[in-house]
Amino acid sequence: MIPRSFRLNRSDIEWVLKKGESFAVDLFIVKFLKEKLQDSSPHFSVIVSAKLSAKAVERNRLRRKIFEAIRLNILNQNKLPFKIVIIPKKKALKSDYQDLEKSTKDFAQMLTKKLNG
Image (cartoon, rainbow, N blue to C red; front, side, top):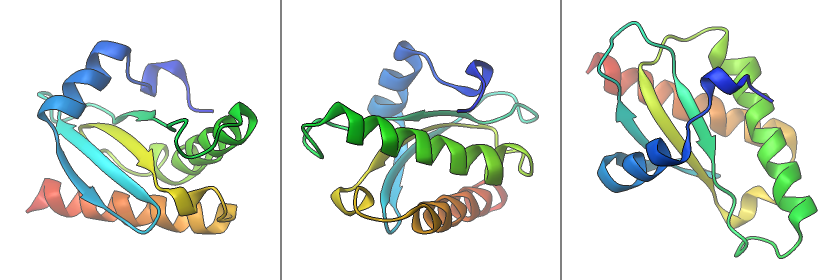
């Protein structure tokens, strides 16, 4: 799990979902909003709908895997001044950790391009 200081609160999640831009990678839909401070660190939230699975165990396991991929691949390396909401697709439930990690790296590269371009 990522530290609480890198997670979004409910009002920020609603704001990003309402006003943010979005794009899709293989396993996720990513909604993001640029923060006002350039040197700020990224803030994340993962929303796993009950439509994906009726079992809370499966939804929570997927959420933990995604947060772990974010912690290992994004928080330690990148300075992305974004508020990011990740919405997994149905096939993310059946994918293994390496696929989730690859999709995480893919959306981090796309956000870096948005920041620089």
